[in-house]
Amino acid sequence: MMFLGSLNVQRTVRLVCIAGLLLLFAACASTGAVKKDEEGGNVFADLPAGALAYVWLDVKPSRSLLDNILARYRLDTKTIKTFFDRTDTAVAAVYPAAGSQHERARRFLLAGYGKNYPALLSSFSLFFDPAWKKTKSVTGRKYWRSVKNRVSLFMQKDRSLVSDADPFFTEDGVEAPENFDLFRADADVSAWITGPDLLNNALARMDIPITVPATALFVSASGHEEGWEVVFRLETPGQAQARGLVSVLTLVRNALSGGYIKDPKVAAFAGLLLSEPPSVDGNALILRCPAISEADLAGLIASFSIQLNQQ
Image (cartoon, rainbow, N blue to C red; front, side, top):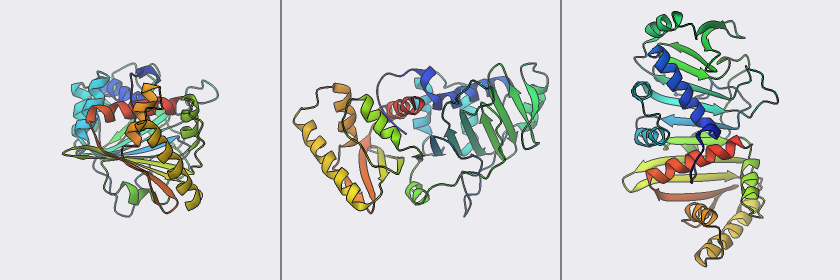
C-alpha cells in the first residue's frame, strides 16, 4: 500500500474512493454503519473477487495517517471527516480497468462499518436531488446512483457501501488468502495485492533487471511513537526462492551503501525498503521498515496507488 514522490490525483485510483465519498457526503449529508463483527467472520464479505488489491483499515489508530492523506489532496473537508469520525473499520477494493468504457464496470468498492450514520436523512436528501436516482441492483436491492458523478451509494444503520458501479454482487464475497488474517492481526492498516506481477512491472519501469517469483504480496502499517512500522511479506513458491531473493536484495542493499545506484528516486525508494536486512519466514520474504514518518508513508501509499492504476 505505500510509496513516495509527487503524485497525480487523477491517476490515483484509491483516491477516487475518497473523492467519491466527498461527492457523496456533500450531496446527502451521509448515511449509516455499526462496526462489523469480525469474530470468526469474513471481513471482506462485502467485496467481490477480481480486484487488484484489497485494503483493511482500523480507522481510530490510523486516523492521523488518514487525515494526512486527505489533506495532501485537499479532501480534508468536514463531511469526509464526519464520515470517518463515525466509522470504526473499513475495507476497500481496487479493480482493474475494464476493456470498454461501460458505465457499470466496477473500478472500486468501499465498505464502511461504524455508528450513527444518518441514513434516513440521507435518503430524504437524495430523493429531492435530481442528480441522484434510486436504482435496482443485479441482486434486486435498491441503492442510490449519481450518473453525473459516477458514484453509487447504499447505506443503512450499520453499513455503508460506496462504488463507481453497482455496489452489490451475486457471487460470494472474496476471502483473504492463507496467512493474511494472521499477518494483519496487529496492524492498523493492511492490504494484499492479488497480482504479484505488479512488483515486476514496477521494477521494469524503474529499469531494475530483477524478476521476483512472488505468489502473493501483503503489506501492513502500524503506528508507534517513533514512527510507522511498515512490513512487506512476499509469498514465494518455496523457501529456496525466498532465500534467493534475500541474497539478491542483500547485494542491492550493499550497492546502496556504496552509492552505485545513481537514480536518486530509485535509491531513496530502495533505501526505504531495505532500511533493515531482509529475512525469511517459511516461504516468504520479509521486508521491515521500522520507523517511517507519517508524511513519507502517505507518499508511499499514494505512489503505490499509481502503480496499481498502471496495471
